[in-house]
Image 1 (tube, rainbow, N blue to C red):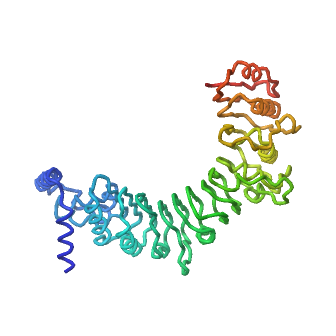
Image 2 (image 1 turned 90 degrees about the vertical axis):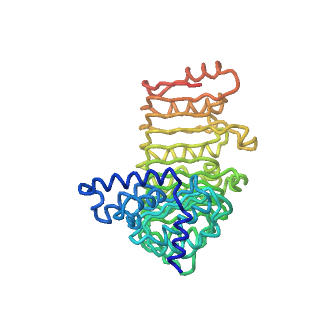
Image 3 (image 1 turned 60 degrees about the vertical axis):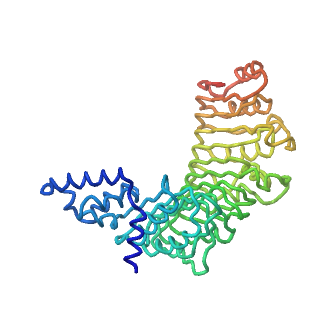
Length: 437
């Protein structure tokens, strides 16, 4: 019965006439030079490695070249499957055949498609989990989210995991991925507890990407070996415990409730401390979306528990007329004594509305020293007084500044603002102010 079913599958996944003609020609040529055909005498593992550089469909086609290549594709350590121009039926047949007939070790498995495969997904994951791959990439982005079955969480040797358009629900028996170093989750839904435990039970995790998620209100990321973090989504709270983190991108979507709430000026809790307090070796920090608004909600400390001595580059999306955001940013600058590069993105007025604490930076009487700042930029500059005042402060704080770039996006006449900018005093005699339009 099995042989008959396989024959049906192979017949269904027939090659088109052009591909058949090409294969017959290649087979004829190979026969004529059989005595010198070094490729045919290669060990199976070498053939498998060669075929791994093709996608699975092309690799399977090589079985028609000669008898020595008939089963070579079944030893491929790397399998890449993409529905591309294949019909849904042909792609399902291809995936079934590859997962069922593959005899060797699968090191890397990559599947992507733009059609709906919900009926087959569970079967594919069961067959895949039996192969114990070290790397799994699943990008099936059509239709509702795929619920990741429990069998995938039983792959103990997994080192790299990339999932998209999925639902993460950990099984009770989940023991963790002890060898996993890279985890990417995009367009997914989960719960606070499941995502916390998934990260916690990956003790070797070094790279983490959480992008476009639902169902998670409070992110709690505890990862002692983490050195790269990317978080972009809709959440209310975040707590980081990642003492070896070097690069971080943190963005809060504008759907989040956190930025909409009224800042608690006398709140004893420091959101900066909670989010960034453990990042003692951070080198590059990007704060985007409404994340700075979130950080500015609670108590703003002039001195933070951790001094970011390794922090060299900062990129901030900020509302320069919101005094609490400005104070929060300055608190960060003050605790980054070796900051060399600063990129500011000024929030457009139309996005934030007019309910901010509107006090100009000049009225805050801030005195900072940014002795190591060399390069700075202010993007989406509208020529408003708040923005000009911030540039003035920046020029007065940075005695080593060499270049300040301003990307003009204002709608009003820029001549008056330009005159103000060029007339601003500078602590650095080498500082150049460059305005682009």
